[in-house]
Length: 130
Image (cartoon, rainbow, N blue to C red; front, side):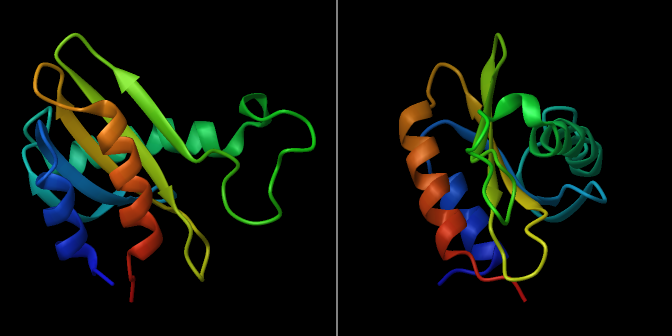
């Protein structure tokens, strides 16, 4: 069971990985980072991705009626495509308030989006916080 640093190192081993972080979406703070940031500053990236994650997690528009789980955010992950890359945000279920997510920034030419999504799901399930 990996901790934060091990989890981020595993994420960075994915093809095309440029940067990874674990972020608290209620505060916008990075709990851990690895690699590069798209804007050169991991804290800025964490705050900006937290806004996106918070919107997806809190708005009912993204979930069909009856699909809302009793605990944790209703969204499993988000994929944002830019001209140069992909951003994959994977929500992490925790024993406390489930307000953290993994953010992986992938190069568009060398990244494998399908593999990244599968591996982030696995990392999120195995991640040990505390």
